[in-house]
Length: 118
Image (cartoon, rainbow, N blue to C red):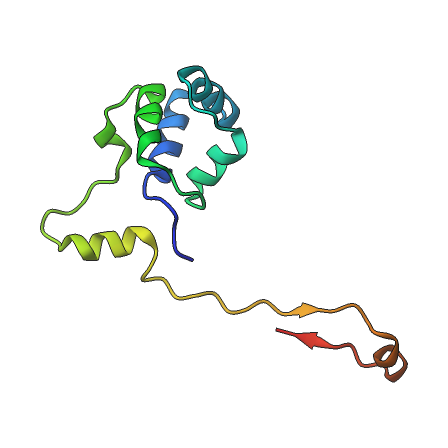
């Protein structure tokens, strides 16, 4: 799955370092003026929520770090495109599709055959 941000792991690490819960970080961000919930903090940490560049200073200030510390270290000897592809998860294979079983329909239930869809 393609990641929606590249700062989530650092936000989680810095939050742990302070000993804060996700709710406590959300409150600190709210006190700085950013309208954010605990759920969105969790999604950012899980890299499932896109972070606006205008929100980065709020995170940096709430966590007591510089903006650059929110970003992962990049290997200066590797091409930037390779590093960003790895960080964004674009190089990871797609998971197989999930099999979902529909509820039994009357005609299929009589035959004893459930319908499977992918």
